[in-house]
Image (cartoon, rainbow, N blue to C red; front, side, top):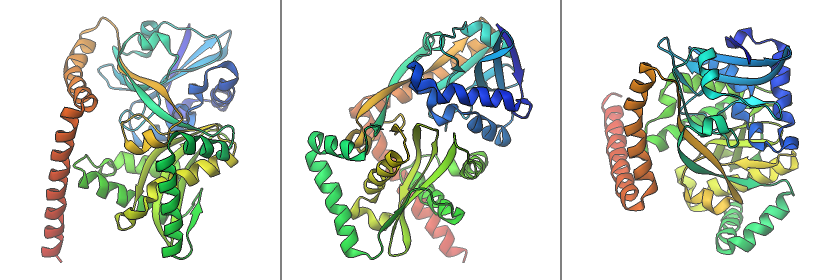
Length: 373
């Protein structure tokens, strides 16, 4: 393999066009996972503007691009998937029929190890190093929204009736209920981020938006727009104010769900569920094939999904002391987390503890604010 490694700004427009073309035609070659917007050049370039160490390996055959492998690296040779921690799809984007040797690729990239946690399906050289596989639910809308809704009614009649009834009740109780699929007002994005930060704190989770690079990345992607990629802010309004919102990424055929949140004052209407149904309807009208809800066990995902994709996590390693040390540090943490998440008898008490800690933290923040006014 002829492999060149580039900084994001060094990628030529011809290479970017080839990368996008691989994604655009992936569904025609039975590789639909490669169409995910997290695998797009735009996502990698945006992360590169917010994080150091982003690189892109371009594999060429007969002088033409055959594959693109984005990654992040440290000086010690530890590699990670681009945007690890917030990226919901990772891997190598390639032409049909392309095969590669994972360790040879790492060697050319100067990596001792490459870590992933949302590896796309059908990447055998990387899958061989996976330590676990996980479901990633999707909503298929390629046959139209009405077909999806009909199947949802048949599969989950009580859930569907309840959600649609809450939407009607919202319309009776509040004037001007409307949905905007692609809101361009950055102030509404800020509202969503505040809601999401409060949700993280309330449930005892780490606030992602407290990390400056994630906040800057979200704003970068909000302003990214092309025919093949865009950041999409979808908003449900009632009474002239946003009550639920979602920010995700769109490729030509996939809407990747990312940051959903809602105003807790409207929780009795299940605005998050109503929002997702509106998103599915609008995305179907735009020619999107499916919504990728992302890895993670959530009741609303189980209710809305039509099927599941599979994503993997693990490490590709070379025989190198850096790889051994990195895996020794990371493996126990991942194993413990996955054990807790996969076993209800462990997850439920752990979740309650986190929420209790979140409430305590929130009360403390309110006290501090009140005493410093």
